[in-house]
Amino acid sequence: MCAASCANSRADGAGVGEAGVEHIVDGLACRVVKGTHAGKSGTVEDRKVSKTGQVTITVRQPDGERIKTLARNVVADQLAEGHAPP
Image (cartoon, rainbow, N blue to C red; front, side, top):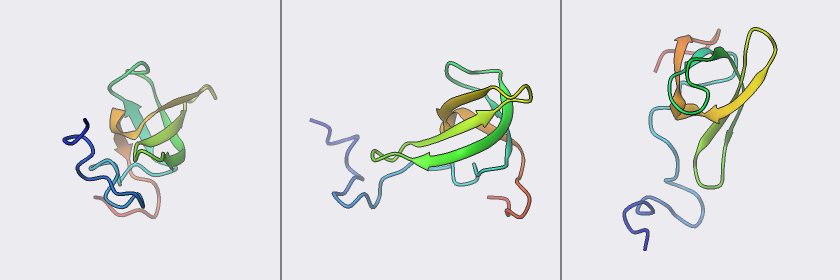
């Protein structure tokens, strides 16, 4: 059924997640490059990992509006203070 997409999943959640989004952390300036909100930018807030391993974030735009998107849809503009580059 989902052998290919579930190959890395385990009942305890280990091995589940998105590769390449570790550097998307709270306080990071970012731009949304894919998805419904493509073209918008702001600061990452409220980073969470869902049960299925998807990393979701809230991006607060300069005007105060907040949007929810997947971390894989954004690129970093600058690193948050105190975080090392990937």
